[in-house]
Structure formats: C-alpha cells, structure tokens
Image (cartoon, rainbow, N blue to C red; front, side):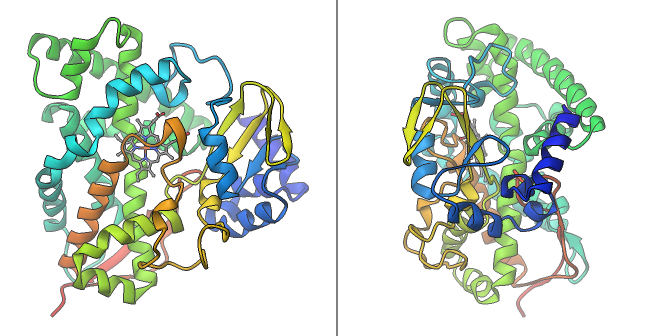
Length: 400
Ligand code: HEM
C-alpha cells in the first residue's frame, strides 16, 4: 500500500501533477495556489493520476448531491470501519437516521453549559503571560471531553477512549507510515474491546445516552456487527476536525488582528468567524465519490467505477461564488455557502455540534486573553486532507 502510494506520488511529482503535489509539502503548507491551477484547467479535469478532480463549487456540490455517485463507488460490506460514512443507501439511510437525532440542533441545544464548563476548565489551566500550545493544551482535549460525555462513556473509560480514538482519528488524515498502520490496528482492536464491554454495561443498566439507545435498537435497525463501527465513527469524526476548526479560526483571527479585536469586543461575532473559517481554511480539505454508472457532468463523461476528487477547500475559494475569496472577511454575506461540511447525503451529521463547540471555544478564549500572540511559527500537521497546525505556540494576556 505504501509503495503504491509512493510510486503515484513520485510519478505525479515528476510530471508536476497538481493533485500529486497536494500530497507533498506544497499542498500541506499551502494548497490554495494548487486549487487555483486545478480550477484554471477546467471545472472537471482528468489528472495524470487517472482520477477526475474539481475545485469548482458548482461541480463539487453537484457530484456530492448526485445519487449516481457513491462513496468509493464500491459495494460496501458490513466490515466498513467508519460505518455509514463509508456506506451507500439503503444502509447509509438506515444508520444515519438512527444517529442523526443525537446531533441535531434540538438535541444539542441544552449542551451549551456542558461545553462552556469543559472550555473554562481547560482555560483555567493555561498560564497568563507564559507560553502554551493552543492545540495540545486547549483545542485538542476539548472535543474529546465533549463527545465522551455525549456518548455516555463513563469517566473511568474516557482516558482510554481518548487515547485510542486519537490514533484512529489521526488516520482520517491519511496513514503516514507503517508504524502508523500498526498503531491504527491496535487502536481499532482496543476500541472494539472497550465498546463491547460498554454495550454489556448499558444493556444491564441503560441510561439516557447514545450507547444505551444503540443497544436497545440492536436487531433490525442496527445489526450486531454494525455497532462497533458506528460508535467508532461517532467517537472520532469530531476529534481532529473540531480541533482544527478551533485552531484554524484562532490562526485566521491572529493574522487579522482587527478581526480578533472585533470578536473580543463582541462575542456574538464568534459564529461569523467560525463560518468564515470553514470557508477560508476548512479543516477537511477534500473528499471524493465514485461513479456507480456512467455520468455526464460538466461536459465530460465519468465512467462507472471512475473516481472524482472533490476539493472542498478549493470550492470554498471559487470566485464565481465568493467575492475576493482569498480574503478573510467576518462580514461576508454568503460565507455559509461553503462546502466545509460537504454536501448531499453525507453532509456532516455533527455540524451543529462542531459549530457550537468552536463558537464557545473562540468566545471564551477571546474573552480570557484579549491579547494573544503567536511566539514562533506553528508546525503544520502531516498530510493535506485535514488542514491545521499540530503545534501552535502562543502567549496570552488579559485586556488591561
Ligand atoms: C461527515 C466535516 C465535526 C460526525 C463529515 C463530512 C465532512 C465533515 C466534510 C462528509 C465527508 C464526505 O462527504 O465524504 C466535519 C468538520 C467538523 C466535523 C469540518 C468539525 C469542524 C463532526 C462532529 C461529529 C461529526 C463533531 C459528531 C460526532 C460526522 C459523521 C459523518 C460526518 C457521523 C458521516 C455522515 C454521513 O456519512 O452521512 N464531516 N465534521 N463530524 N461527520 Fe463531520
């Protein structure tokens, strides 16, 4: 697997294929010029790597909504690791219907207090006037604490879940090495073990939480072999993604100090900062779909079995939709036309929760540290699918 990937990259690099360059440092550090190149070549282009790609907003949206495209374009079996994210209807519909209410706006409306408490607890541990890491010390532990609470994972297990979940979540951004593959297998087994134990616990003593609902629904609605992958998906889908939404929003605000000060002065603006970051510097930069039959789209034929890479981060900077797209603008009227949460039937189930978490995190941090500064350049995460900093050294002072 790794050799095949390396060959594709080396070939692509030699031929200057922008899609291959995305996987290398060029794309990791700054993918946006590559998206421009891809868009300039046409709304839907066949790259030298033999896959279609698009950074055009309308075409991305169309592919993601078109039911003739599916995830992977393959028949998905029950062993799918990430449950309905990797399934097509009808299985996708059945499992998503089960999970969606947990994360709907109504379900999470009462969650403000819990999230605020988690955020304040983390902020209280941060030093004033001395360096700390915005990702490791703040953005990363937050979504983990929230989701373990929402799923009803007992405190005693939370540390293990967070450790193995983090390994599994990091694989969303692509496997980096053989060692990483080994760690992923280990994490997968350990998560299955702890979830299975938890199912027994909740069968014996049901509570008012997702896992209890899940064990009650086991049978027709959720098949036994689907239980662990479903829980794994719900546990980890919000790990790396929400962390980087908080990190990328903070970074954008620090690079635009007038925007930082506006949000600090008016916390209601935090929601606009989050929405604009989902457009301007989205945590999930791309996804893709396979054609399940021949499809004519943007003047081309995508044959059954062929794959289209939808560059969400590129679509979000399409000048046909967004005026001066490279500008970070808190007042942008249509920022929420972004594709940062994808589109169509796989549109992110956790979007309302992710936005709520990020909004509270940004409100609280701008209140706590009216002045926050980066003390040296951050380090970009490995891989270019998930975009963000893995190290984000800052120092903060309250407004005097
Ligand atoms: C799907 C992004 C947070 C749960 C997706 C997809 C994207 C995405 C782009 C669709 C992938 C595709 O179309 O192939 C994000 C971002 C987040 C975030 C940027 C944070 C900033 C969360 C959270 C949860 C969550 C907090 C909840 C635990 C899911 C699930 C799916 C999904 C379950 C699968 C939906 C389906 O296949 O029908 N997310 N996500 N996400 N997300 Fe999120």
